[in-house]
Image 1 (cartoon, rainbow, N blue to C red):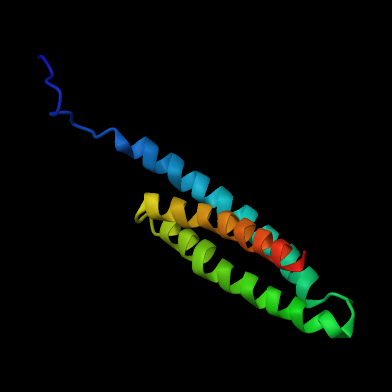
Image 2 (image 1 turned 90 degrees about the vertical axis):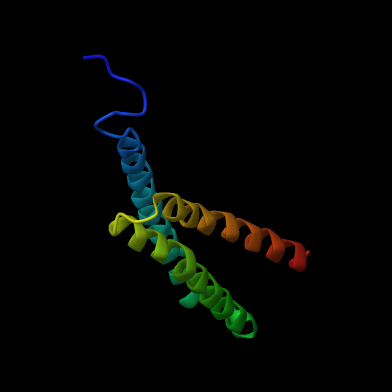
Length: 109
C-alpha cells in the first residue's frame, strides 16, 4: 500500500510539542530559582534605610513580572495547552528583566 503525503495516520507535530513543553518547564524552573534568589536579595537586603524602599519596590516589580510571565507559562505547559504561547511567556520573563535592568542602569547613571 502506497502512502500519500497528507494522509498520515499520526501527525508529526507531537514530538515538537513535547520538546517545547520540556523547554518551557526547564525555563520556568530556572526562572523560579532566579526569582527566589533576587527577591530574597531585594526584600531582605541590609541596605541603607534611605534606599530600602527602592529595593522593596524593585522586588515587588520583579515579583509582578514573574507572576505575569513565568507562572502562566508553567500553568499552560502543565495543562498541555498552547505550547507556543507557553514558551513565549517563559522567554518573555528574562527578556523583560534584562530590559528593566538596563533601564534601571541608565536611570542611575
